[in-house]
Image (cartoon, rainbow, N blue to C red; front, side):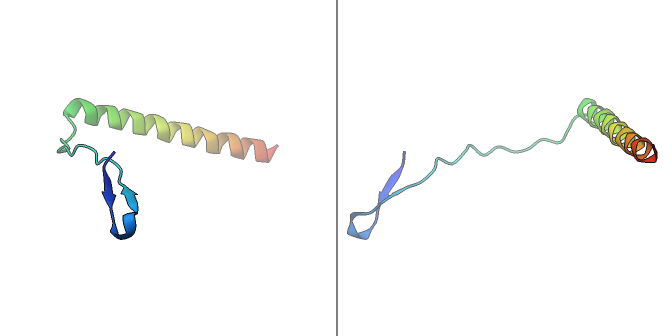
Length: 58
């Protein structure tokens, strides 16, 4: 761990910095997967609303 010593003998401990990398845009396959996951999530939330309305109407 990298330590630095300040005036008066105090030590500071700094976290290691992660490696920096350049983000790449998603491929067409990844975009398609994002759309499918979004549609599934939307259907799930809509079904939760339907169940909530049906349960409150009873």
